[in-house]
Length: 108
Image (cartoon, rainbow, N blue to C red; front, side):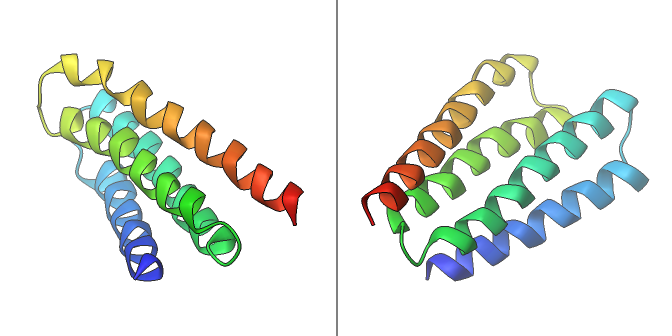
């Protein structure tokens, strides 16, 4: 099931990047979509790469990317800018996921 969520996350990241490149309402919205899409896509692929040995970190990567990118996507679509205060929570989860994955690899 984790692989399903990772591939769905990657598809959403591609869609966000395409919308940012071709349909965003402003340069700021395009930047939010581009940044969110990049982070989400990288972490979807990373989750697939590590899920065999580090399932917990892979799941945390997807959750962190969803929070990070999701808040940016919402702001690109006109949501209040205070959502930007939530974005670093997703980024922090991504950092924890990478450290946790590294720990799992260290132990094996």
